[in-house]
Image (cartoon, rainbow, N blue to C red; front, side, top):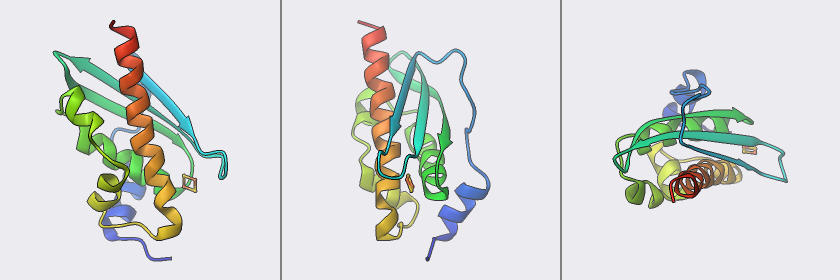
Length: 123
Ligand code: FES
């Protein structure tokens, strides 16, 4: 299977892979088919994602996509981060093999779940 250099880099050196104790939004999503699980943590201040991290129990592509989405989302407003699509994540990684596209869905869905959680906590 062909993985881009960016995918291999984010898999081998994941960015922001840690639990965030003081997160104000947390989202966990899973894929029932492969059984992979991803948790995204965000810290939002003044409506901007100041910090974001992840924990992923999954395949290499899921780890690479979680790492990449933390780099895409940091510094964005909540509204901008909600616009990050499943395809954006794969494109930033210079593509994923078609059979692995569902792994980038997990990253985008995890971020959206974390934002929903943040909104619920701050109503
Ligand atoms: Fe399930 Fe990649 S194989 S997220």
